Image (cartoon, rainbow, N blue to C red):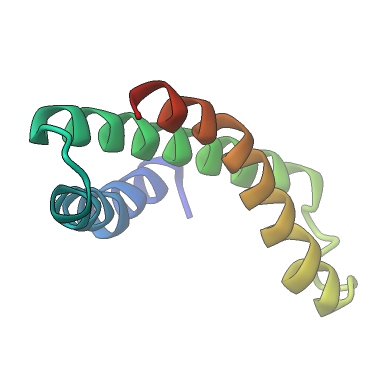
Length: 99
């Protein structure tokens, strides 16, 4: 996948839906204003999208030609875990700042 294709897919298909659903759900469960909820969710979404692009770029560069020979458990267990843990490391402080 090229960089522009990856950027379009992550932004249009996933992040827009997640931001809207998050703001809608948080509006009913918190007493925060919609502008604070929307701003914080957009910032979290952009941070997660940026980390996902960086992670996948370096993963593609470092494992070029290796993925056919590697075990599937490495990609199924380790990669998503590493991606999500570091993503939480960047996004939890943003959420804590706004709430």
